[in-house]
Length: 155
Image (cartoon, rainbow, N blue to C red; front, side, top):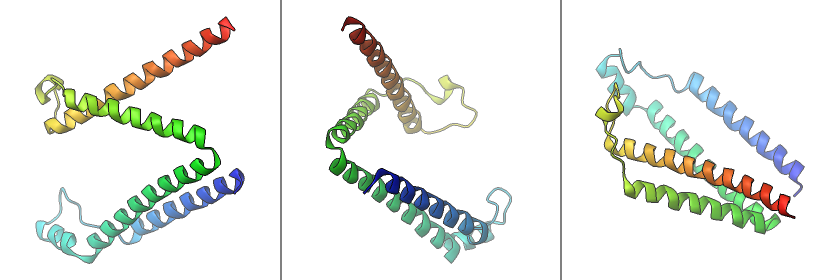
């Protein structure tokens, strides 16, 4: 399959999913206001068909997204295996770095961060691990650019 056709098909798929989501949100997924609504009305919506439809649609979109990502990697493995394997290894390395930061934990708390609305310690830990992972990735990318510059300069 040509790259031009694959790009076109992916763009058509994106537009179709967006259009379906917008139409469903406008006409089908109109629930009560949770902050000022009647509790009985909220419970009726939660137990009704609209909430079930919204949940099924969201689950379908998530599964479709995972399927598209897996399909992308399979197509790339077939068409360009070396770069794809390097990309997959990069994702695995980022995951390992993230998991290391998760296991290290954080000393931040709701009080030390001065949060107006307290959150769970797990949220703080995962957010901190994600921030440190992004910081490590940026530093490694910067070092790779500098290394490439010096290698080119030496040659």
